[in-house]
Length: 491
Image 1 (cartoon, rainbow, N blue to C red):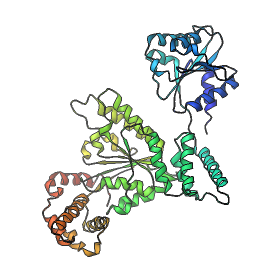
Image 2: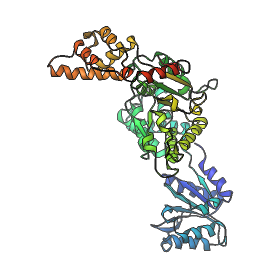
Image 3: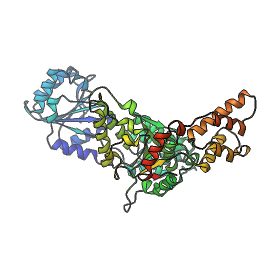
Image 4: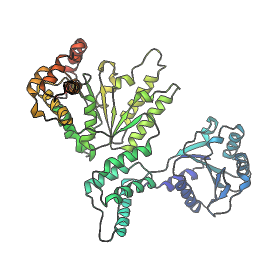
């Protein structure tokens, strides 16, 4: 694990008077400073509004007379010996001008000696006048080596409690579990390991989705990301053979990085509405065995200046912490389309997204879908940002047969009882979504007639439907002309 105490020591020795640490691991942070007191030979005091000031390197009794923020700051300023002061959950008191002035005087050394103020909270924003005197610090999270050691420790504990037994797993599954746990704190990592092991004494593929979902719940801050549980198996997608082959070629390079190969970064799926772009995006995660996160730009936008970009950065940080994963952005053109009353928000969102695409190093594979490619800026779709642009066209006869078979099987019906060739011929111009709806409507018709669903019911529904390829024939043909020489066919 990266040496947090060494990094903190370096920061303190550089004489930064104010340090901000945003963390949920208060106990671990306080313990690190208790260890640091021995290295530096400086006293370390902890303050909270509940107990006042207390010297923790000697475990002295708290000074309850200094519980009020102004009293504590005044006492720190008047103290003549150098020291480190851990201010726990001080953020509610940073709006008081008197407190701000006392902090500033302490930081500028107006007292008898220099002090280091360390503000520790789940979230903390300093007033602007204190920014030049401060530095932020983030605690390091466990790396894969540390997590692997904890897995062995928890497995040994389970084996001691169950004499004669050992935890069963294999190297591939163990490596995937470790990857899923990177980005969490030690208590959370150990708890999820124990849950995986203690259920059945084994770490199996069945544990991985549960670990991913639990990790997402720990990281989720109620933002624009959602965790997609139903990642369709790629066999549930009819056609798209070229896309499937492309993904299969790059699967290993993404999951097991090779220095000789550039890691896959993402793809853009363009095509007809209902053609299967969203299902294909889900299936990428299913094919690669990765968690799928969906970024909802409708939830992302906020009326306050700068909040939308902040929400986007937070969502992208969460995706990085969930890595390796697939990040799905549906109808991306709607996220960055600007209007007369946009106030520049869409441009700033685009800038934030482009920066992330260029600089990210976490294994997050982006799958973006779009219906209106003409609304996308060229800087988003150029090579280097996206690995490839695939065009998802309407399914041909062979693929339509597959789609009918898939949706009949999903509903417990045997495809061999239907004339799939006739159905494929009569559904020319239908998208995958429209074929599914024909099956659904056919079931309602059959129930109305108190009969079992057959080919006749499906043909009736197909004949009564005007697919999008007819209703929107001109825009569709224009899209096909655009894609002919600019994209790669997904079929």
